[in-house]
Image 1: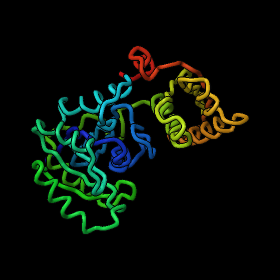
Image 2: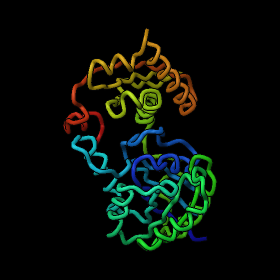
Image 3: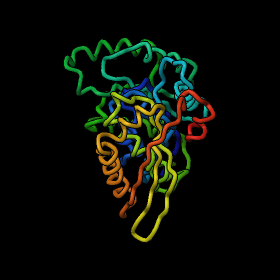
Image 4: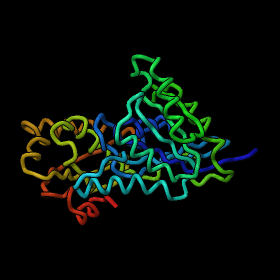
Length: 295
């Protein structure tokens, strides 16, 4: 039996559902999701292993028109870097029949890519007039040669198995690079900070879209209980007030939801403490970005 193993870069502009798609393909939540652009800030591997293959999906931040902030430059560098690092297949994700300047920018970046590119039309369940899909697909097919074009809904899971089936034959022959029970390259410390940040974005994304970062300060595993302490960094004192909420209600809600996620992940009781601290201008400071793990 031929066994295949390879790396698949999942790219696209912000908020097209890349992380939701990777989670669905892997069968577990390895990347946080929220209805906010640039929720994903790191390159994260999602590993799908079967008896015939191991597909290593690389979830990336959305490629976007670069702003002046250091964080914006970091996100674009992180996303673009996967296109030149031993990747075997690229999955280019777009949202329904929408096409923006940022989608065009991603397509232009793929011009020099010589490996197979699979176009994914995500969120097809949100396309009200299905008759618009065919001309949209016909137009995109003239822009470059795609190995496959797959229409799916990552949120519902519809047709996601089709994407997996067309990708596997494009992978090179080879042995698995990760144990069969491993689903990501990230450790629990990283996931703990991400789960807290996810809750913050979901509850406070309108007020604090990009001014939040989370850092694990304490992580102690014990018999049946893991103690975790996480610092929530904001940029202004007013933002600290928003995160804490009236009488601490918002911070308590966020901590409880994150703790429940962590208990499911770890399979044990979790004691989670969170603190909110101010570090002015951290998102536009390269040195502080590195300190907070953005490298």
